[in-house]
Image (cartoon, rainbow, N blue to C red; front, side):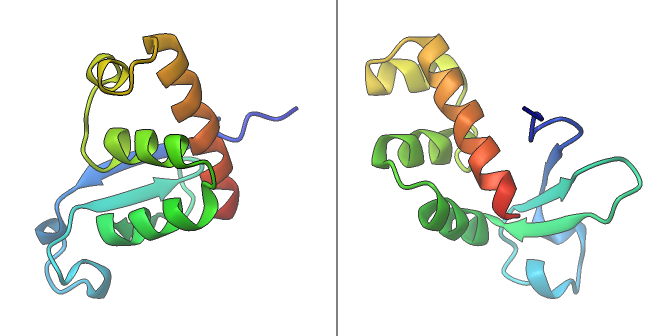
Length: 105
C-alpha cells in the first residue's frame, strides 16, 4: 500500500505573505500543499481547510483532533490530554485523517 503522505509538504504561512492573492485576501493563514518538490503548490486558507476537514473526515472525534492539530497548531501531548487519549493514539488519528484528507486534495 502506497503511503499517501510520502513527499507531501504542508507549509503554513500567513495570508499577508502573498499580498493581492485572491485565495488569501481575507488574511487567513494559508496552507500550501506540495506533493513533490517541483510540483505545483495548492493553497488553502484555514477556512477552506476547515471546510475540507468537515466534508471528508466523517468521524467527529477525528475531525476535532485534526482541526486542533492543523488549524490551531496544538502539539500532540496537549491534544492527548484534552481528549483523554494517549499521545500515540492522537498521532495515529492525525496521521490517518491526513491520509484520508490528502486523497481528496
